[in-house]
View (cartoon, rainbow, N blue to C red):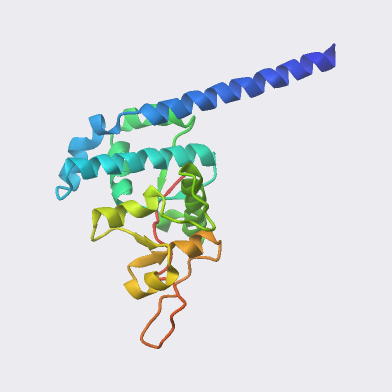
Length: 216
């Protein structure tokens, strides 16, 4: 009897966690970011059209969804545009707290790269972001045929201060220090700077590791 009762308790706990997870996924999927943030983002980024801001809000949804998928594992933000929208959201203090409680079950802090405890923490977080963003969109993280939205959006929008990623490491090197090699992130080979230069090296990735701020 005791064993049967223990099994029932465990089964009930598993079912409850699944229901909670589904409720959070539904909340994140249907949350209307534009209603709250569109005017603020338009002020912050006046060069963007309504359609471009809408694309950023899709990216912001992706960001919260992959943080939900990752649990408490720290991720790094790969997009400047989405980071701007996240900043604006955080300024609605009570609304953001309520959103985090309903969508994540915890408060997602914005952690600047400078405040991270280890020099490689932002890089490790970016690798996790890559894996989860790829899984979210059904992309093989080790052999991608396209970039997930969070890694593509800054270049798509043409942001001068954005992060640009290339699937092809040679193209990333040729693009200069502003382009990052997504292949090195996905293969787990690190994000060290290995851009090609006038010395003739052609096997590198542009710059170091894109992104910076993380969720905690």
